[in-house]
Amino acid sequence: MFSNALRRFATVHGKPQLYHETITWAYIFLIRERVARAGTRPSWDEFASNNADLLTWKNGLVHDYYRQETLATDLARAIFIFPDKFTQP
Image (cartoon, one colour):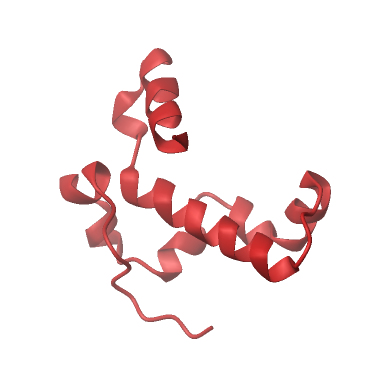
C-alpha cells in the first residue's frame, strides 16, 4: 500500500516524524477524484498542468478541508481523520 511505502521511505531517510496519515490519504483521495473527473488517464505532465493546486505543499489544498489544529494532532498523524472544514465545490 502506498501509505506503508511512504512511511518506510520517511523512516529510511531518518524522518519518520514527517509521515502524516491524514494528509497522505487526503491527497490520495483528491488525486483519485481528479483523475476520475478527467475521464482519461492523463500523462504526468498533463495531470501536473491541470492540477497545480495539488502540487503546492505549504498551505496547499488539504488546508481547505482541515483546520490546522486538527492536522497538528497526534491522532491525525496516526490515522485518517475526516475533513473538519466546509469547502464550496
